[in-house]
Length: 262
Image (cartoon, rainbow, N blue to C red; front, side, top):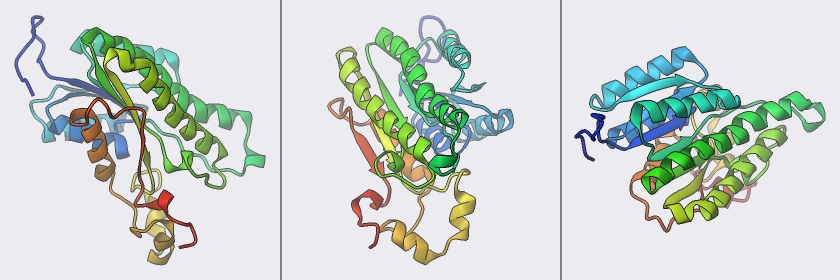
């Protein structure tokens, strides 16, 4: 990667935005891209987690320009402000990874309209609004890479997660639509569908179940580290051919390939 400066004096390095980049899969993605020479903007809702993420990224990649922007991706004004800052401070955008997440478990007959709208706002609307801004900046550069973090729950449904399942399925569909609409501008769009991953959202649960239960969840009989998902995202952003677009790639230890009663 080039490490010079452009005509405006900015560091001439590719720039990535990672929403939900302070923890879990998003942080692992930010680490992977910073390690590949990217300047990284991490966005998230919790200021303390964002500060910790920036410190960690600067340790891993001292040369990278890293910043954190407090952002609720479910709030359009926050998303506007995020990308306005990216444009003002970096002047370019090469990659967008939407990893902002929400998890809430409830049987469908107990869901409220507020539960439904909150999930859709964070998972679907947040991704879509981010992609709208990213598209404008990427078109100006003649191309870019978009990776949306979906879930195996968007492919096979889990009980008590109707709003989450529907939202993640919409993310997969959005990636396909973006691939079709943005191909003329040199922009690729793909989705990742993680299975059981040790993130802060589910690590406490995974740590309490026994090996026999995990054996029935996927052929690998384990939960993955976020870095295993991040490595696939890194490939899509930095190495994958542009002909690879519109795909949803399951990183699930074979969960969706297996008869659940294996």
